[in-house]
Length: 264
Length: 316
Image (cartoon, rainbow over all chains, first blue to last red; front, side, top):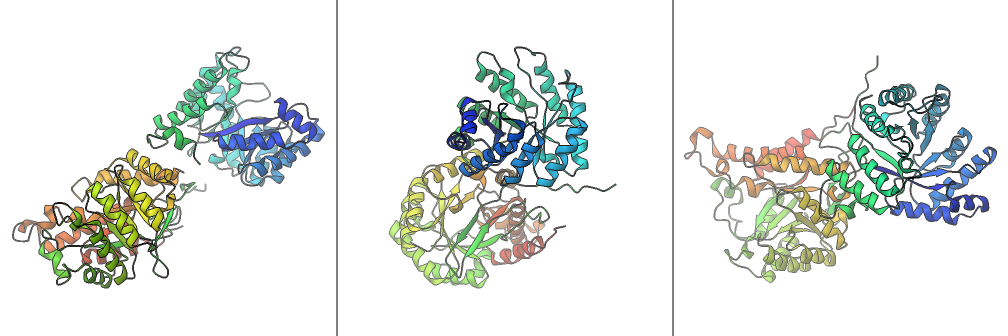
């Protein structure tokens, strides 16, 4: 399970203030902290309060600051292509672009960008019409992303398809569809594309968020989930992933499996 | 339509371990691929071969095995030199005499023998105890001290005695063989326990406990294969080179020990026994073994010819 730490995002108050004051400390803190908590990537998002014209500069600063504090690659998260490219330009190592949808005009921007920078790319199984309701429609959009990635020479292990999960208190019927979509996406190509999801979305405005997140993550892993953007502060989530890695025969069992999962 | 050649891309390598001291070091491990798939990754070091030397004359070795060592079997120093003449990359000194059923030799006596052998040959040394866990801890502690700084490989460390042996390896600059009884979970756990004592992971060699051809070879094979895949996919507690104690297993089988007269339908003993050892070793080379302990010098020769061929690049 490739965990992408969600915390460096302008939606969180401390990061928003850090951006406003150009204070590197909170960014450094969360970079280190998430590194210690098994994150393989740091998601970096300027948040909605930064003006579009300022986003590239803020993204550049966030990526540099985060990478100074932790030896991790970043998942550069924005709806603004200029912000993403600004982040890629200063990034060290293999970045991840978050994200394109299955709209052709968006793929025409992000596929060449991923190829140019040798970055991985998250593809959302949705388009301008919104998030499809059924697993089959999600898989159909995923297929369009797979075909475009292949045409740009992006290897399947660099493509992360997100079947899109919605909050279970308002879109409960999407849960099983997303799980089924994961199964189908893993069969779209050989080698299969990778999969990811914005996990915390499943429990937006719900009670017992950690329990819902953790349960859905494990169910998704059994359906073929390779990666998740998640709250890695949650130690029970990490324990559950460690256990699932054993039960899915991905890691070799040993008595210290909870501890070895946390070692790099 | 272009055909895409499917190649595995591994994210990790087996750790490289250095034995002995310059200029006579032997390096093992470092593989970045499944064995001999040179087109998928590098095999930095070829598999290395040690010949086994005992610290007392063996009584149950068949004549075809004692013949090449005639005249040196009661002198470990001379025996070790003979093995070097036969082309061994390393010497594996087995301290059989320490066993309570044999001479019950003291740790000090064993250490003295080990030191004499180490000083007589240039190649690096593997030192094995007698197989009694509690005794081996005491013996290897003294051996480690006597061989301080010679960067040897000591074993077998088990879950029962690893603490003493690990500490001795750390203090005196040696490497350790972590041995588990055909159990990949215990194998991993023992590596973790040893590294938790702060011995570096690249100073551990895994002994998965191998069996000879016809005697459970497939169990060890699949454990070694799983170990290597674990190593290549990033499991650092599986990313150690593997030692295969082939000689001791092969030379207790009836296929190796029965004389030509006793089993005429099996063909000539000398050819059959050596083949048994070579096929067992070659099988484990294919499963991911990095260090092989053999007994017959002819087996070493034939096994090495096999390795030479397998090390020819098939990269494309």
